[in-house]
Image (cartoon, rainbow over the protein chains, first blue to last red):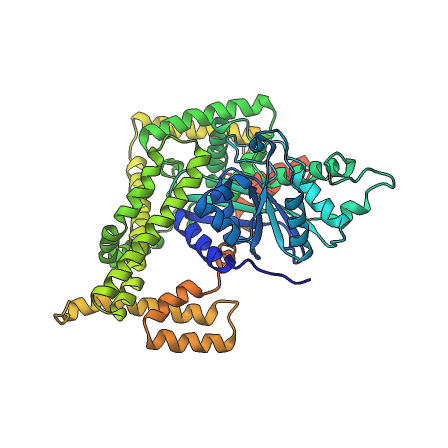
Amino acid sequence: MTRQRPSGAPAVRRLAAFGSRLVYRDIEVVERGRPPTGPVLAVSSHFGGVADAMLLIALSERFPRIVARDLIWRYPVAGSLMRWIGAIPVRRRADSGDGTARNEDMFAACHEALRSGDVVLIFPEGVTQEDPHLAPIRTGAARIALGARAAGVEGIEVLPIGVHYEDRAAFRSRVLVSFGEPIPLDDVVAQIAPGEDVDAGTGTGQAVHRLTALIAERMGRVGTSYRDWEQARALQLAAEVVLREATPDGAADPGVPLALTQRLAAGLADRPDGVRAPLEAAATTYRSTLQELDVDDGAVATAPRRAFWHVVRDAVLTVVLLPYGAVGVLLGAVPYLLTQTTRLLRMSPPMLSTIMPAVALLAFLGQWTWLTVRAAVETSVTFGAVVAVLAPLCVASMVFVAERLALLGRASRRWWLGRRSTGPVVRARQERRAVLAAAVEALGAEVGR
Amino acid sequence: MNEPLTTAQAIVVLLPVVVAWVYTVVDVVRRPGVRRRGRVGWLVAVTLVPLAMVLWMLARPVAIQQRVLAAALPADDPRSRLVDLVEARDRGEVDEAAYLSGLRTVLPPTG
């Protein structure tokens, strides 16, 4: 078994890691099982377009062979990039025009990659999803896995992955990547009854449908499942309120991890309508008031939970880095504004989640390259190297200072709100208590009566 | 650019370069996936030529996953306990009394 990395793998992996760090403020990773070491068919949810692929390339232990729509190969730069990273084109019936999709080459390439012990990454929902729940899983993933097994590849594991975005079209937001428990394909094959139809070629076999159902079930465990975005936002806010109440006083980080918010919100989404509907209504009302006040839940939570010394440390670091941050503003203003203008484009959120990281990468890397080359040409190579080191440091300082100033701003706002005893602030506190009570009710218990 | 830098200007420029050099040296020493001989070579290079710091940043092995996983919550964090408890109850792994008792330990009274 010889693993052959695509020629572009190291460079693209580095670029993906840089892009992920640049675009997202926080990347949380959850692993529910041991990382597989043999051939892997990774099956991921698909809410973020190219951002999903960028994150999974950056986070995967091994460079994945991505199965993607063959349409991408028709574009000059994108097509070259796909060939460079060893991606595998798949033809969809909807794209073919004649309603057929002949994918023998795709299956053969996937089987060969799995035989070599590689990771094959596929998005079994087919296309990027608009709604916050998994679309029906197509049979392609199961057919690839069972076909490779029938071709003699042993030890394949199917790895379910869920990618959740706090706001998929926002620059410097948070993202959660959940790696689920791998499904050993050999165990699935061992359960196939004698005489059962295992035809992986046509996708009509019983084993294909059983494995597809198993993949859907496991992806559901690591994925989100909300009725619509309104429900998702309401239940995530309710989960955040509950978790903030459970945050230990003086915790180093007063933020609520996205992983916990998603897990608790998923639990709340499964509650019966009788308790979930009042919770959604209370959280939606509270969210409107937060928007009216232009604050987040942390600012309304009554007890100041952020440790004093962390505020002092942030303030000192902010002052020290302020001069470099100021230079960073000059250097990073154009790429930042270019990235932010993508929000003004009239596109769907999935398309924006593809365009925004691409613009951020090109703009920041382009600016850095231009500055470095110009400094090297106009003065000396050594000065070019110093600029190459200092420019990203200054931009990083700008980001650090901006985000710490935002934190300090929220802390001062919380202090100010804590002293208000009239108006929307009082209403917000009452609504927050109502959300907490409804959430506890929904969780199945009234605590401390 | 041909005028000599004042002391203050030199400090403002050199300080972040020194910080970057210290960061790079620590990174070269600690980053997984680099052979011993390679580490020594990089250490010599980044010390003698500033440009090598840029090359190191571009060429170093990617270790994003280790960093984000290292920031995971401790197991005894009450927020983790709360979510674990709710999920365990949904799977039928804890009885109602233990569930209510567990909730009381992590959530303040709502009444």
